[in-house]
Structure formats: C-alpha cells, structure tokens
Length: 256
Image 1: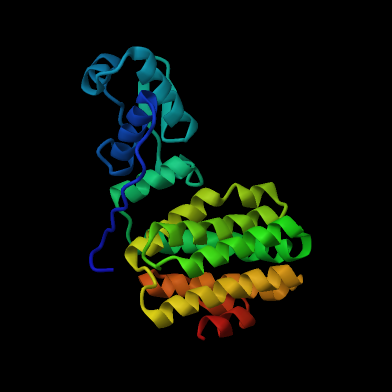
Image 2: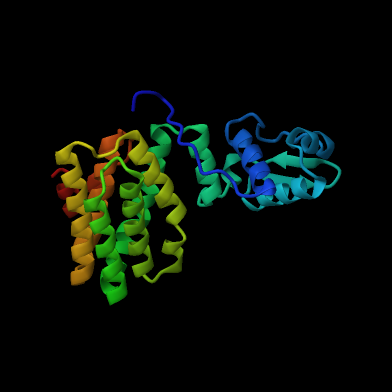
C-alpha cells in the first residue's frame, strides 16, 4: 500500500432514501458527525438533500437499524458509538470502503474471515451437493479465464467464497458474505495478483479449496482456505496474528 488510506468507491444507491442514508452514513463513519452529537433538524436536512420529510425519515430508520443512529424523545437523532454499528451489514462495510480503509481495517477483515471461512470450508466438505461442486468448479474456471486485475476475476473469486459458505449449510456463515465481499474487493484494489507467479499461487490455493471440498477432505479444505486468506494478507501488507495460531498445517502451507 502506498498511502495510509485506500478509498474504494461503492456502488451508488438506487433510491432517494438509500442515497440519503448512504451520505449520512459516510459522514458518520468519516467523523463529520461525531459520536454523541445530534444530527441537524429535519428542515435543514430535507433542504440540504432536496428530499421530502418521508424520504428523510425512511433514511434515518435505515441508519437506526444499522446501529449508526438512535432517536430519543425530546433529544432528537443522535450518532451512536462505533461499538454499536453493525459491521456485518453490507452497506456499513461499503461505506467504510468509500471513506477509506487502512491496514488495520484490512487486518480486522482478515481476522473475522479466518474465524469463519476455514470452518465453512470444512463443513462444506462434509455437506456439499453435486450442485455445490459444480458451482465451485464454475467459479475457479472463471478465475482461470479472466485477467487477474479485472472485475470478472474478482467476481469469480467472490462467487467461489460465497459458494463455499452456501455449501456449508450454515445460514450464519452464508450471512457473512458482506464481510467477504468487502475484504476481497479491498484486497484486489490494493494489490491484484497480476504477477504470473502470484496469480498462479492464488489459483492454486483456490483450486486446493475446490478439490478438497469435492473430495470430502474437511481438514485439507480448512487448511487451504486459511492459507488462501493469509496469502492475500501478505499481498496487501495488513497486520494479522501469527499463522501458527490457525493450525500447523495452514501455517506451513501459507509459507509456500
């Protein structure tokens, strides 16, 4: 990474209330509305955004549901502390990317992935269906076909990881797709695997994940997933805990 912050513009909202929620959410995450402060009144906000009062209220409800705001009688709408934000929410993650993320944030994303995805891969090896295997193979073929710095490659990588979560049969693991998407898109913006050797390494780890799940090898699937995540960590220079804490096999593979 060449600077302290990397900004990754999110996809634009598709409705007025979603766009207002996005704008206020970004201002909160960026610290322009500090924790514990009240938002401006309805009249000021509706004028500023050029929207109706119902649209504004729908936007505020959205941000309350995501944990960024709270509404109190005779007090108004107040910004909540970061500890209350729903960091698994896809919009909240996207807004962080819009504001700009640093190595610490990338490391935090990697750590939560390490807590979830290797176990998902192990479960997938035990529970996968023929349809799951076909989807995993389709994803790895997409990655092999597309240039490493293309959106199609990133989409194929993301689809593979989501397919693993789906194959795990655990709905909670499937709900982590927002974290996985944010981490992968950030990782590829910071450092796409364009070097031929690096590209081959990325493809190799993902092929190992697919093969282990297809063969029903749970331990190998978990180790390959762990190693793939650590390889990404090394590419973008984030700080994360010692690979050895995630199993000796994974630690050995991550040094390959």
